[in-house]
Length: 228
Image (cartoon, rainbow, N blue to C red):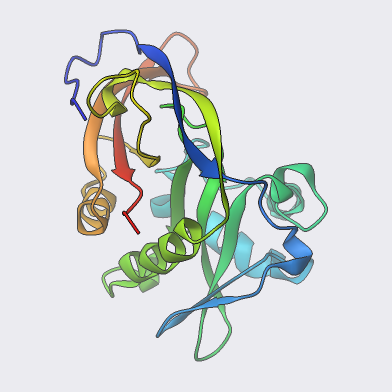
């Protein structure tokens, strides 16, 4: 995998043969995933209050594409509805409500929210309420998620991906990757990604959704599927 440091260079796309998860299992059939301190489970409509608490925190929301807290409970409710069982966007993602195993309290979200991310591969992300930062929960969450994600049934596919994620010759069958995107100054998430085995693959610029014409610098990380 060749890192590209010139953020002004346009993304370069190549189509490769690789593997990806088959269609994700229906949300109604997804079992909770447990770690020592956390439970990862599908969202429910009753999560709205805890979800709202999460999405009201400026220090959490600054790292999201939205870049700001939700305006009100109605905005949060609409966001949650797109993650519930039966919703098109919810069923096409492999994302979970993150709860404390001891109490069941929902404290965040995490998983793969896009099958086709900014670098072409599926992309992961997470959000955790700030009062739970600094406890190693983000690393525990993503370690637990990735173990379940890599265990999903696979199929061979042709995928258009960013050239920086290619291993060896682009005509070779490529090892499967998963990616993550961070802002340059999000050192905490970058440290988590490093612990998980992600490598910086590409610096690139993307138009700010809230400021047309303004470019923001992003760091694209990639990780190969472990060999089994």
